[in-house]
Length: 132
Image (cartoon, rainbow, N blue to C red):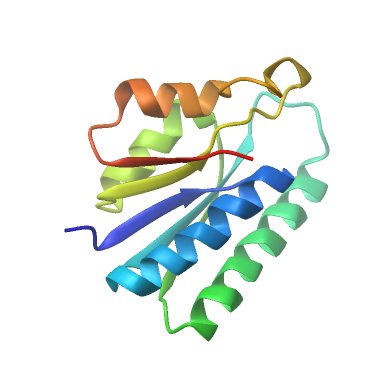
């Protein structure tokens, strides 16, 4: 049974579909949400703007989920998404994950993104892929 449903998010419109699906699923199965936003330590973007974006996205998830009575645990960290996503899943006892399939880079728009690909290959918990 899934009690802790992890939803890694970013600023892409595709992740919004994963968020909406995840909140609805968590509500239906009486699970908590682990919302994760990782500031990529390898990106040259402004840390402040990415942190603001991450905090806004996480706050929005929490607000929407709380309206349905779903508890959310927010995680905003600076790190390497390819490395740290699994660490967060293990430390938070995530037993299911919902991810969108599109990548952030232009080269990944029509394929599974690199982080999602890593999740598919390495996670040992149920994975739900959300497609646009």
